[in-house]
Length: 224
Picture: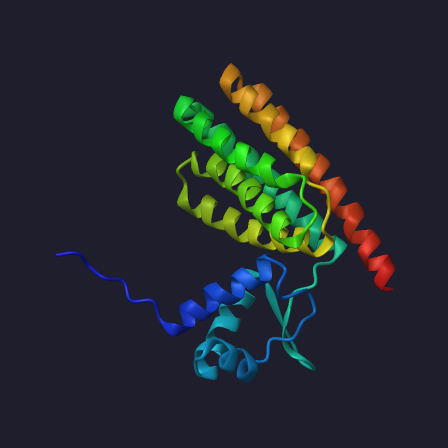
């Protein structure tokens, strides 16, 4: 007999609100009003409040004493911290996965599938196209990290990517260059060189870090 997992209203509300935040439909600084959200979702305010607390734990929402729950507006310092964590986690995971023989032909094929979809949407200019490009960009990185088969690392990495994804949709940057950088990583995996893989990954993350910081600084200056 198959076991059924009951998804609570709070969990459903959390999933829906999280999707709205990482897709840019709920923007940084926007208030989360439980009564209004409850009416929109067709549920009572209580599970919405529970969902907001979980979003706060995810690092996507902050609790302001004056405004209540608001979507997190990431600072330059936040972005620096997120990239420092990503670089450590992704490098470490690739190191472990390579030594365990998990960066094999099957994983390489999966990465190429993600890359093809990423390439398809990366040149778009709309928020919807950007969200789709980022979905496959993100999938490329989670596939690499999950190859290490360390759930606590994968979980932390997913949480960090939720936050960096939210930053990306707020700045609407150009991510087409990431496609070729991902290709370099995939090519290094096919070549079977750990040093080349880590070098390609590190160069990609460093370039992304610098680009994101530049865009966030420009956004903050424009809003000052």
